[in-house]
Length: 212
Ligand code: URA
Picture (cartoon, rainbow, N blue to C red):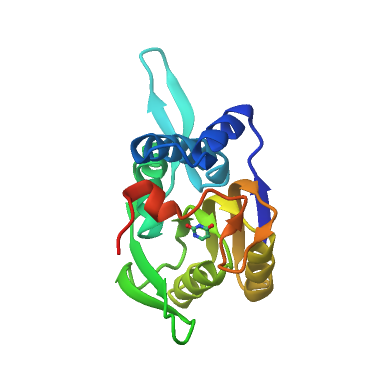
């Protein structure tokens, strides 16, 4: 597994505003969207391309374009929706699938409550978007799900990650797939409620408001 921590002054600045508990939802949404576009630039560095010839007004140019099968972007509901547009802005030809995952508070298992993905993902590059990599359990379940459908190449974009989550994902995935994590920052640790410290709070609530 590769971890790429995006290192850029614009990312640092936007993250500082996102972390501030006084930042209101509309500004949070806008900044999360801008941050994803910056992360997406890094995350798509190895997207598959193919050669094409393009006739310019002057001559024929040998160019490259994104190859088939088209990449797949998968936001993890609900908070991942806040990162979808920033991602598809850079990858407009990508297809979008959805995974809704939540933790069963009794068994602590991750349960999939929504799934809109092709059955066969062989040969597809998949880009998962989710703001927070905390314990890593959701990402592990999402990667397992994608691997069962034949995906081998998975890149996951996060605003923040905890070291505990990165370690858990690395141990769970091993060499079963080519997994890359692209993240704006890796924070200190998880607290007893599995929140990232210092983090930015509950990303879903900060994007969309508190839902009881
Ligand atoms: N999910 C969040 O939204 N925030 C955290 O800090 C951890 C998980």
